[in-house]
Image (tube, rainbow, N blue to C red; front, side, top):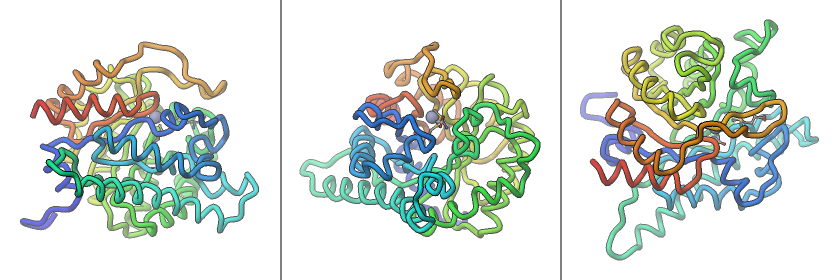
Amino acid sequence: MGIGKTTPFEDLIEKAGGCAVVDGGFATQLEKHGADINDPLWSALCLIKDPHLIKKVHKEYLEAGADILVTSSYQATLPGFVSRGLSIEEGESLLRRSVELALEARDSFWDSMKNKHGGHAYNRALVAASIGSYGAYLADGSEYSGSYGSNVGLDKLKDFHRKRLQILVEAGPDLLAFETIPNKLEAQACVELLEEENIKIPSWICFSSVDGENAPSGESFKECLNVINKCDKVKAVGINCAPPQFIEDLILKLNKLTDKAIVVYPNSGEVWDGRDKKWLPSKCFNDDKFECFATRWRDSGAKLIGGCCRTTPSTVQAISKALKEKL
Ligand SMILES: C[S+](C)CC[C@H](N)C(=O)O
Ligand SMILES: N[C@@H](CCS)C(=O)O
Ligand SMILES: [Zn+2]
């Protein structure tokens, strides 16, 4: 950051009163509308089958008060599309489309708000291109274990992420969101790629966590953040798709480990069964609980707060209400 100069990302956080609202479970809301995403491509299947629904879900999160939209590219990958019989060119076009759909939803929502009489409380949202972990692509639940096996090294992870990263960036998002990163090696791959590709837009890197203390691999967040802190291109770090009850302690922990902004968007508390591909009922938190948590997470130091799987626009509305009312 130059003296007296702020980026759109920093501006948004400031305009939002110091804490911006990230959207909620994207795939969850697709399913609420009847989409069947029980597929290796998971939510990215809708890029092929129902792009209108993707735009509709983005709009619902904007209406609920999201300041940041995360795109539908979490599990969209070139090898994933090719294994469904699509060409590389078609796969590339779908990746670009994931960003365009969110940009179009943002722009049309913002245009409609500008013409509203009597004003409104919305900010012009930013679009974060989702980059799901290698584990998400494997579709075997390994984004929650970090166990990629000994044949998956740094170069393999960089090769996996490079082309998609380039295509998503060329499509013009405002931010990059690395999601459910489960281990230090993949964090390092992301950081090295940002440097090698000289990415100009800000990124956040989010880890999942299954024990509330460490990355899913068992590696400490201290080790993981040591890798990330060296990279100025990463503007925020945090946790997504972990249970809400872990979040407050994790914010306090991360605050001690980094000067970067903290981003948190937990799931509802349900647990993903990667083998049977379903959510297992577990200690689950409703929208009222998220409303209480949101101010606590902000007061603990989070600068970006939202929801992940099994949360919906009503969760985001509760978070937005809490953060914008109780400034
Ligand atoms: C965040 S998890 C629920 C996404 C789905 C997973 N990668 C799978 O395909 O099984
Ligand atoms: N952005 C993704 C994250 C899954 S963990 C989604 O909401 O579907
Ligand atoms: Zn999730």
